[in-house]
Image (cartoon, rainbow, N blue to C red):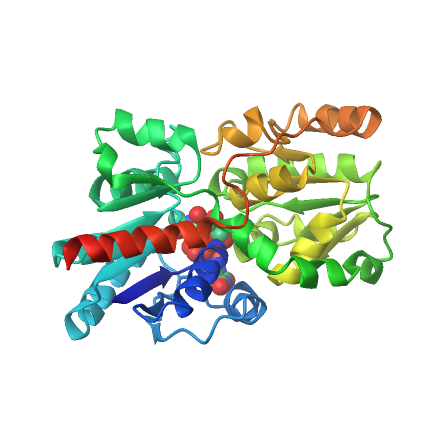
Length: 365
Ligand code: UD1
């Protein structure tokens, strides 16, 4: 069975890696990694392949950056061409980036079966490009692998047939467990002259937070304020770097004592810093999940989340620029919020996905 694993951007690589390794053990399966090239910088892409012990992508579409339509359109054209040259038995798409919907559209129109890993998540906020990608991908995919009960409910409400939905758990936790020994082996915080559990991690890259000067300035003010009580490490995403420079905010941040700006970090270094941090301030999706799993307080600078289970059962709190400093200070004084174990976030999701693919294969022979 030939299976395309389509990956495009940084968070996708952590989602295909455990599945690639699990499929490599199966004699009936041949997994082909298709990198669309949406992320192309060394530290946004290649560094993740080596950390996650992935081979170089078997196919590379070289799409690069662009507007939403340009990126989606180019990926569709290029992936359609690849599909016509070598038709897989299944295309697996992950997450919610532009390549996810692009590959789904190209494959389904050619009659290639599509499975979506991390299906069913909804923020109910259609101003987010990812929400559009999630809704459209889930409407088209043949198999929907979900991480949590809320995702199952969302799909059912949208009319997806129950037979297509399989709850498999959270694949990102597999990556984390796969590499836990390596992640725990070092103490990266020492490189920044920091002490264990006495610094915070920051990531910011959502268009809503970084694309307008006013919102990005607010974010910067918040970070400067928090850093007065807790040193912060902030690996800066290329989008954010560009905007900080354009709005003349970069030097202020660079000159803030206790605020350490770095280039985007590879997976192992970044996770090592998260493991040893006191708390995390972010607008990422995946980090809300990783911190919940690890029991580390997470302050998400967004009005909503497509991962509500991290708020209900995990350590995640949705914050605004107006209340995040107070929330962080509360946690610094009162300690961690309680965190519960989330069902099927256990490091065995890839095995459940492989089982589901095998069932699909057996039902179509
Ligand atoms: C994309 C995803 C987002 C995901 C994020 C993770 C969409 C709609 N968004 O957003 O869901 O959370 O990836 O990072 O698919 N750039 C570089 N080097 C790179 C990649 C990008 O310099 O390797 C620059 C581009 O020139 C562009 C900007 O970063 O200006 C944004 O890149 P893009 O892939 O369009 O969106 P992200 O913000 O990364």
